[in-house]
Length: 313
Image (tube, rainbow, N blue to C red; front, side):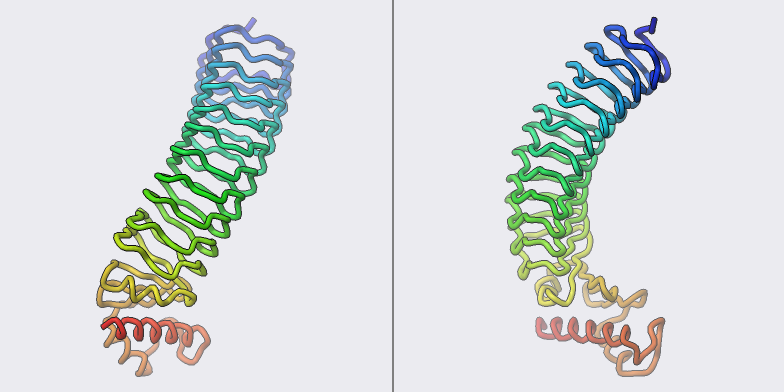
């Protein structure tokens, strides 16, 4: 007979136990891999992690609370109960779950890569990261919140809801998203490398870096704010003239050239525009030898930036 109050972990992996007591509370982890338990009791509370990979459990009980991680990869669970709360991570990669319940709250990371879930429910809250790479999800619900990073790299998602907020990074590299909504806010980095986005909304805010390498963005809107760097490449060098004088830093990542106020930083060396001009006309060397292909790329980038800044006056 199992006590319904377990102070530490409860490991029933490959055990002969078939029934768990009602109101079972496990302060630590609950291991059910390969166990004969088919039904979980109502009101089950797990203070640590709940492991269901390889178990016979097909349905999770109402009111289930897992303070740690919930592992469903390789499990037989098909339906998640309403009001499910997971304090840690929810692993659904390779699971049979097809629908997420309304109001689902995940304190940590929600793993949906290679899962059968195609729709995100209303009221979904993810405190950590949400990875939709390789998932079947095509749209995000209104009022959707992600506290950590959101990965939409090469995902099937095509639109973002208005007032969309991401606490961490938003990765749209190679995604199908073409428009960023009004009220758009990203607490970390915004990666638009190779994305289909062509314009940025007025007053958009990015707390970290803005990556525009090989993007289709050709103009920057009024009132935009970026807390870190704007990362460009030779395909959108014209943006430098819009950034200079309006924005703090612009970095050209492939040769580590940074424009800050009236100074340029190349590698670890910082000089004024005039000082760099005289240096390139001379024969002094730093880490990259003159006459090499790498040096030619650096000099080309410098001259491009110099011309743009001089045109701006």
